[in-house]
Length: 275
Image 1 (tube, rainbow, N blue to C red):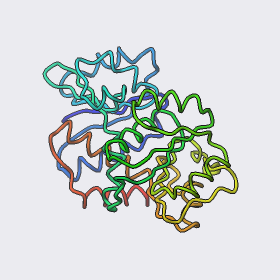
Image 2 (image 1 turned 135 degrees about the horizontal axis):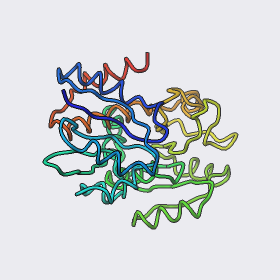
Image 3 (image 1 turned 120 degrees about the vertical axis):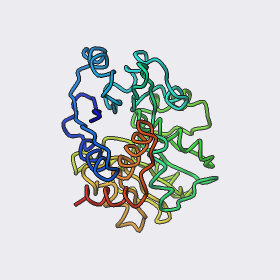
Image 4 (image 1 turned 60 degrees about the vertical axis):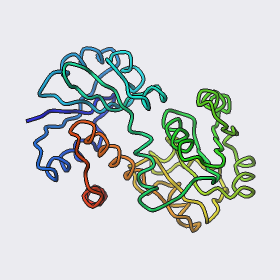
């Protein structure tokens, strides 16, 4: 029996145990996967306690994704570029860090054959999730990235750190409406926490998305956030955050075990989690 866990604070809300139980059954590979609440001051001790066999690794969520980096023996290039780790693999006494955010973000878009090269994209929010989204969009060679945040200075700092052409705006009605109406973005991503309560939306009141846009919410609970409900009413295609979460987990499985999980299996697990 192998062991793994997701660590964070808080972490009891995580869907990862359910996802990895489903992976374990589908792949016929026994894995005991749990959620462990780890306070920041206990991170190093927790890592020391589980880094030996039969533990294969950890998923890492807030607030540890940046703090765990100096505790590792090596980090993969994408994790170094983002300055954050969300997967740790234990092998040969070494702790290796990876980041699956970029691959996880793109997986649902590729599944529905959304092409972004040369297109205009809008990202709402300037936190850690937004960093991964912008990295993914840059990798896809989109035509333009417009980053909106209620505190423009934070968005400007993120844009400088990303070392690429990212246009920064205040997340308020007038500048957002101007970009949506004039540039008709192909993709609008909610990378804020607005919607976790099932009531709030990142969009200022009265703002409508162009019907040509794909609306993507990184929040996976609730499935139908206010942002996605509004987008669907306005004729947009939508992408649920759960698809990203399951895709990230599949990337984790591949890192730990060297096995890919079939798209058919991933879709079945995603549907089961929605029910």
